[in-house]
Length: 262
Image (cartoon, rainbow, N blue to C red):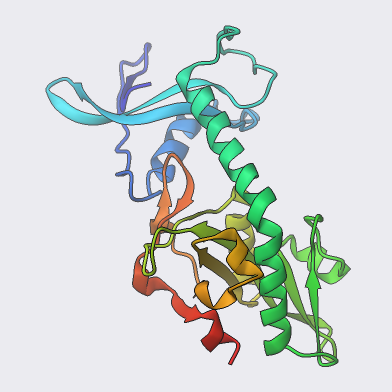
């Protein structure tokens, strides 16, 4: 699908200006294209996840962004799309490989990072005034009040007396080659949505990123680990080919754990 598309009957040309790879502003343009294809007064087609590529190409003497949709993410192909071959295209292989990396990282270091974060949160919000709830293998909070908010996070800080959430903490871990490396982590669509829901409820939603060099440092040498706390997440950090967050170094507050726990 090219950035310029022609309507066969009225020959009306619509031009979609897609954003650069550094922003997600082009979602508005894509929404306009979606609305244009949907007939007025009729139910709009249900959205579904797709795989594809976004790159600059030459078109009518100009350099434009081309969004090429390859296939849907789900196993069932929605009506209107071509049948898929058994051999996975490059976009599917890239998608599966990225998910395997994420799942591997979560399985290896996710629990260690979350356990360390829970210890630090309990230092900041001690019992009995607060209850620090680690969700562990669950997506939903054990507090029904938090589940009603629809917020996904690794740790909930519950104000016992006020019977309300005080803080949400989403834990990430990044293996780095040296100290001072630029932060990078994946933020799922559900986590990004939760960030907005928490802001709407006026409850802080923080990202705690643990930068480590060796996995054993979580248990043997925690002073080698740096914690970066992001009080907020900017849409400008999100990459268009996935929810990879690459904030600037100054965007978060960096703590050596020996200082953070002192």
